[in-house]
Every structure is written in C-alpha cells, then in structure tokens.
Image (cartoon, rainbow, N blue to C red; front, side, top):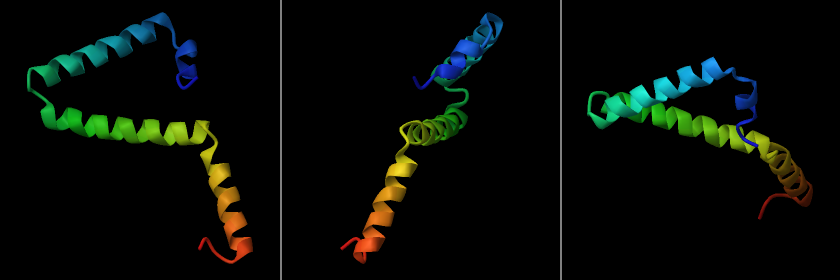
Length: 76
C-alpha cells in the first residue's frame, strides 16, 4: 500500500506524528496558521502525487509510450 513506511515506525513515533498533526489541525482551525498550513498542504499533496506516480510505475509506462511514438514519427 501507499503507507508501507508506517509499519516500521515505533508506537512512540506514531504518537509524536499524531500529536504534531493534531496541533497543526487545531492551530489551523483557530486561524493561527492559515497561510502556513496551506503551504504545508500544497507541499504534502505534491509529495503524495509524486509518490503515487512512482508507486504506480507510471514513469515506465510514459517512457514506453514516448519511445513508441518516436518510432512512429511523432505523436500525431
């Protein structure tokens, strides 16, 4: 699955992660760090898109598609 690394995190580490996430959500809800949390969400979402792209092996599929289109003389 996408979160295989969680299996290797100790219970103490999971607790720290949950506490940090809870504090961030609380501060965001209270309006303290709205701009900062939005930047973190953007970075996190880009990381998840990239990680999903790699896990789904899309780079190999794209490379195959581009190599096939170059042999035919272009994509169009």
